[in-house]
Length: 79
Image 1 (cartoon, helix red, strand yellow):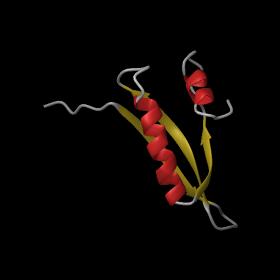
Image 2 (cartoon, rainbow, N blue to C red):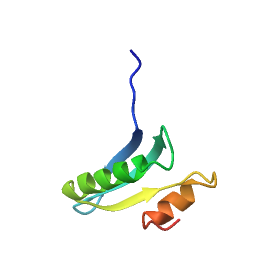
Image 3 (cartoon, helix red, strand yellow):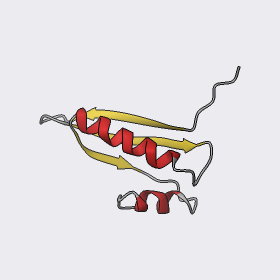
Image 4 (cartoon, rainbow, N blue to C red):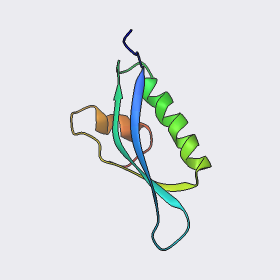
């Protein structure tokens, strides 16, 4: 059987060197089908998890493929 997924994200959580807290970076995100809401659900769940882990900054570098910047802007992120 081949594993199936709707969406996946790779995140690295980092501790600050000189103060308490954490920051995270999204390294990669993909969805099997675009424009079905899977990415939006995935990021909403990730944001909740990062809040619980006391992450106060989230950094991402969207692919400049014409779709990613619009997606992240629609989620409230500056690109």
